[in-house]
Length: 330
Image (cartoon, rainbow, N blue to C red; front, side):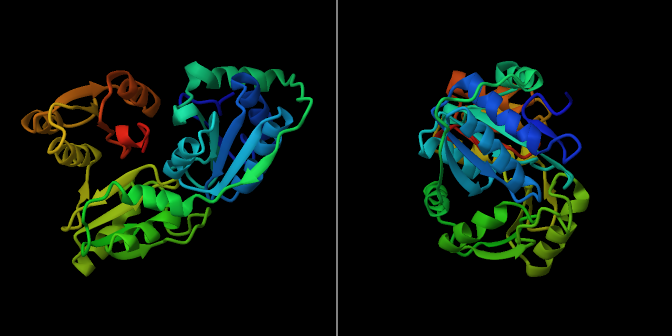
């Protein structure tokens, strides 16, 4: 089945991904990993509510206690899995894909990613077999609102940025739920574009790495003489920066900038970057007394390597940035 990918489950709704499949995925995930408590979150896509409901029904069928954290970004979902000490989690999202798509990101305890080799392949097999036996006692569902806790948590990582002028393009995605409160609390002078949650993506696709999707942001940064611009994808786990000149900043350059900041206080630490990055990245890491580590592409592989080698920070050209102090997550 084509919806079962290397790092997630994803396809067009309702032709490839629908409520029936969501129910089976819930049953299969619970049957495979046998979690006691699972966190479920979802993005603002038009099909996310109904898919989430069906997924939860499948999990309950297997006797799982579900904590529904509702509308969240993927980084906030990772936080919730750790904050609530859950055994696993499922995020209903299709990330930066067009509006026709939806899907599921699966994680184990600690928000450790489930990929095709360590779980998705088995979930696919169980879904195809469709031979589930319900638990003797159905599971339960409780709701949890962690927005304020999450904003405070992210604030704890921030330096003094009061007075900075930032334009943020939320792309009608999940960044719109958290970024306003966060930047306001930090004293940032912020202007927001397309911050209403809208899974039809009426202004542009939720993929900031397509140059067509950042033209509004680039123009606004120049118009307002802002210090920078932020562009997020649909589930807010990918970030593209725009500089004060209105120019797009590559993910590898952003990785180098963050690495330099981290190494100022953590000399000798390992910094991971993906093999698509420019040569300046390892050079900057070395010059700032860090240890450069080159890696193949893929968040599941990178996060595992970070855990194995105790790597403090990793960045991908695609705009993913992972931090050891943030559960090795975005």
